[in-house]
Structures are given as structure tokens and as C-alpha cells.
Length: 203
Image: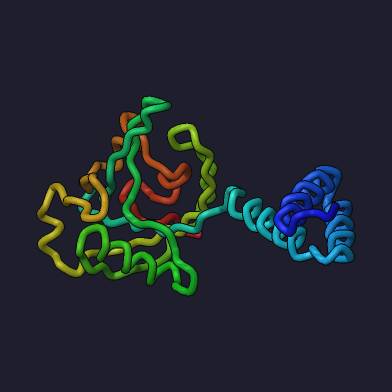
């Protein structure tokens, strides 16, 4: 009695999966055996899907860009709450750098998306590596930090600005509150990039 045509793919998947438990070499050997049996495509498909899933499931390092915009002794930040840590913290506005765009282009785009505002990006203040946890999930970022200014000067007279693509608000917070520890500023190391008057340290 022969096998049903539907049984071959099912058996092939099981064979490759079991062989894969012993290492990729055994899995590819199983693909070769299935190939002789005329069902090698089944094993190749299983390994291909497993390989894609394993890569996409791996955590990755995220490149981001942040803007230090100053108003007197304050910088523009948004407030967030990690309910797992029960921690309130602040961070300058910015976001992820997309493939093919520079960090400056990403910063200009992010401000248009977040505040509907144009900015002039100035000098790079530094690059920070940020390894953290957010709501009990691990994160790893490389943050490019730039000085920036609003093109529209009237924005400096607003104490709060609604973030358009997020249920949050940007506010001016005095740097002294971050220095004395009364408020938390992320990413770690950002406050060290600024002198008391928020100018970059001399190199």
C-alpha cells in the first residue's frame, strides 16, 4: 500500500524538524534524503521558514536620533511612565532612523511628524549607547544627539506642545532638575554632554 500524496509533506516536515533538533547539519541531511524521495522542497521550505522566523525573532539594536532644543535654562522633553518600574522619566524628542536616511534627515522628519514643526539641525553633541528595559522588555539603542532650533520662533513661547503621533506632551524642563536628580533624563549619559549652560563640552 503506497503513501498518500498528502502524507509526504507531513512526514517530511516531521523528519526535518526532528533532524533539526540535532543541528543544522542533520536537518540538511534530511533534506537530501527527502530530495531523493522527490519531496526535497518540503524540507527546504521548513528550514527556510525556520531560518526567517529565528532571525526576525531576535532582538536588534535600534539607531535613533534626538534633538536638544534649548530655551534659556530648559530643554524640550516629553514625559513617560514605566509602570513596571513605577518610574517617571523624560527624554528629548526624536525617533528611529530609517534605512537610507541620514540622522539629520530623520530628526527633521520626526519633528514634522511629532510636532508639525520645522527645525534647523546644528552640531552633533555626541553618540550614546543606551541598554535599557522598558515595561520589562529589553532594549538597545545607539542615540545620535544633535543641538537643534525651531524655525518658527513662536514655538519657544509655548510652554507645552501636543505630540501629534503619540498621546503625549512636550514640555520645557529646567536642566537643573535633571542635574540634582529631582527628575530623570534618558538616555543615560545625556546630561554629561551638556555644560551648565547646555553647551557641548570642549573636546
